[in-house]
Image 1 (cartoon, one colour):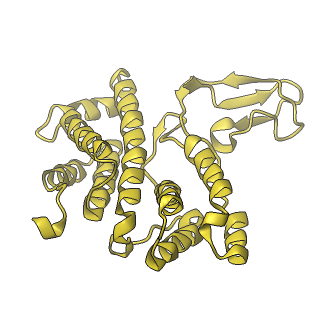
Image 2: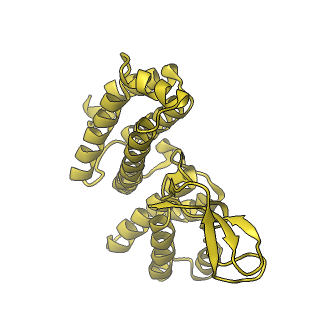
Length: 260
């Protein structure tokens, strides 16, 4: 949605940025009466922070993820639901905290539905719980085979949302006539077409979604790299980054390494 993120309190005159705080109440006096200033900007993100400390402590006490699964998934869903990639009109890249939160959500679900989860899977979920809100992601080669679909589906969902916001951003930027947008337009018309790259990424993500995330972890990681290169390339007018995204798209595989 488009909002005026700069707010001025009607009671005390204090000014703050809703984009930065996510608060509709005045930080100075608590009043809910305020007026917006400046132009409206598209905003799909929020200032929410991921806090899993209570669940980490509970897991230490219970020693079994299934015992905390319900509360943990509620926290994760609430966090993911409020995250987006447009902050005050600025396009943000997919960050590790969001990716880990989404993976943890799906991994807990897989573990909860499995009648006989392996110790390796339990330990991985415990590890993921411990690092998720610190902005860390376990390496692809550390993901147990039984949880590759959890990572695949999680990354697919996050990056599909990124693709949607990316498309909104490109559309809005291209409708504004200024120098920076001209650069975006020129890149769209160059050999490294932003439109074509976006469409190819979307095609791959759609296929991954149809497969319910049952893709190699190397492919999941490649999707993240592609999305980040697209973000960097467009925001910073870096054609080299876009070329890297194109090459990564060319190397996407839905077959396991052993099957290649």
